[in-house]
Image (cartoon, rainbow over all chains, first blue to last red; front, top):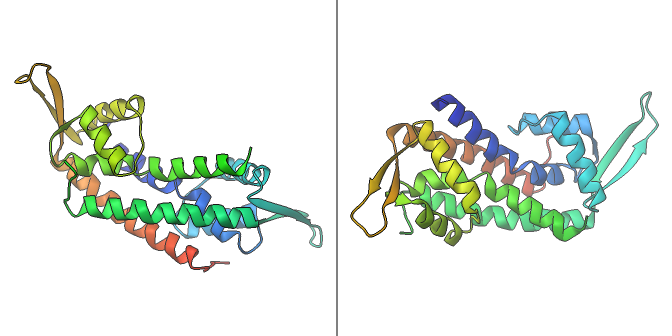
Length: 114
Length: 114
């Protein structure tokens, strides 16, 4: 194991934790899987399809997203958007984000609890 | 699956991503595993020993932490502290944290990239 692996692993873990939250927030505008993947990547959340698509299905099964097939175009696509329950989840995750952010910044400034 | 599970899962993922960073920053002051566990919990990063102890050994193997046995007390304890390489890793993770935080906040305010 080397320092580059430590960095890559640490970065991946930081980013992975926010994929659910970022997906919920992005799907305030209806979107299909591949477009969401591109949006997430553009925002610096590298995620692959094998992770994102099951995540979308899970969030739908949990009632956090609703979906609809768009058959107007040549290729039918399943569009997801956030549900009211998903908005509540996003609000709670954002509140937790604020708490974590405050802790991380306090630590980053050299503070210690012990 | 229900909304509570979605919340619990989402919160756990958010927190888990920052355990490496928080551990590195806390170990600017030398500490042993159990004390670090308590500090992390106190800061709102619930992590269990089965996750943290292997993480500490991995960070040591990667050169991010150094350790020393303290045999002065009744029960010998392995104290970890951050290495110079660990400080560089922490600085890079903090910089990434800033980027992720900016993206999350932009999304949280209702912005969208599409």
